[in-house]
Image 1: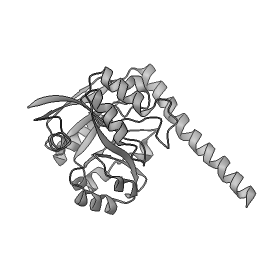
Image 2: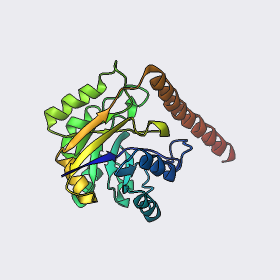
Image 3: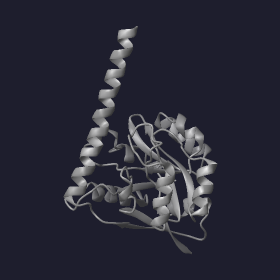
Image 4: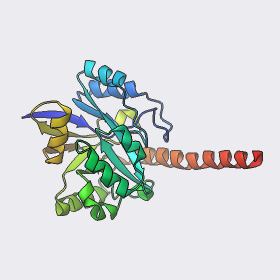
Amino acid sequence: MNNYKVQLHCHSGSDPEDCLFHSDKDVIDRAALHGYDVLALTCHNTVVHTKELEHYAKRKGILLLPGIEKTVEKKHVLIVNAAKEAEFVHTFTDLENYKKNHPQSLIIAPHPYHPLPIKLVSLGNYVEQYAHLFDAIEWSSFYSTYGKFNKKAQKKAEKLNIPMIGTADNHVLRYLNHTFSLVRAPQKTTHDIVQAVKKGHIEIQTKPMNLFMLGGMTARLLTLEYGRKAFRHIINRFRRSRS
């Protein structure tokens, strides 16, 4: 068995819902700099994975897995080793059917009990309601020593007998290495990594953010959230004025 450094939740400038300035290749380059073995680009509601990116990552020693952070009934769900069909998952019934048809995908509950500004899209009690759909629960990097939501997720994972996995969920490139996982698997293949995560062969590596980092990330997320709403409001008013 080997330990592989794994990052399964990160965003790039290809994300249709976030205003980010680092490209897919920038993420891969930074992952290579930090010695990652396995990486997934998980943009919102879109699978941005391409063969070109896969080959680019491979040249840097990285196994690149397709991923997506999908909005399912207004809640975020992380799908790794995602098929293109994952883009058409809109309900938990859809997700259940997707899981049956794509058993090699990993379905992860991201930041399930996180407070604002992402509380509204966090799964909360949906984790227990749909526990049979989740292969892992995320230990989110976006926390401080004062936050208890990751501990709540840990207790829920123990109760439901679901593994926990640490991820960066990074919207700022320099935090890509803040929280990650070491996954024990026979080989660095998609099958072996996916199966190892499902079996809980995971060691989370993490450290809390300081208040300066946490404040900056909170401000950024709030700006993105309300900026999107303001932009949509302007566009809708413009459309109404033209109709």
